[in-house]
Length: 133
View 1 (cartoon, rainbow, N blue to C red):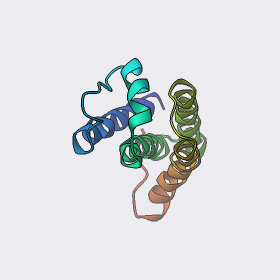
View 2 (view 1 turned 45 degrees about the vertical axis):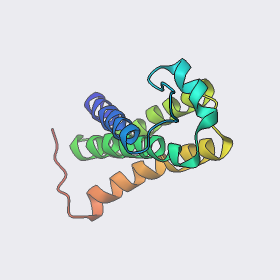
View 3 (view 1 turned 90 degrees about the vertical axis):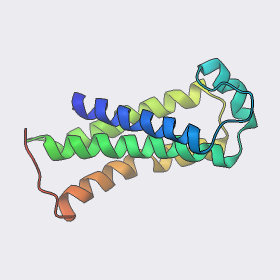
View 4 (view 1 turned 90 degrees about the horizontal axis):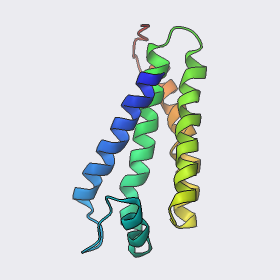
């Protein structure tokens, strides 16, 4: 489970990093610090929220997929535990950063537990062999 959280976090960070190159922040703003991000968010367009959403969804999927595929007992519980952990992290980010309500709702409703379900579904129904470590 710890490895799944770590690898999901890496997937999240890589997606965010890639997104900054594809859809750069508004000109002249530094989004690498929490303070700079708080200043930049009011200037974001809906396009700027694509990669943060994808980062949360992909990170959750990767973590849940690994937890479900590689745990021997209580795999469903472990995958959902990943979902709870990252959901709480997303909730905390909403508290810390002033993002729009539409994005907060979309993120909390779609990026976490549906991705856990998708990860479990993909292991069970897409011909992936469950590997037990």
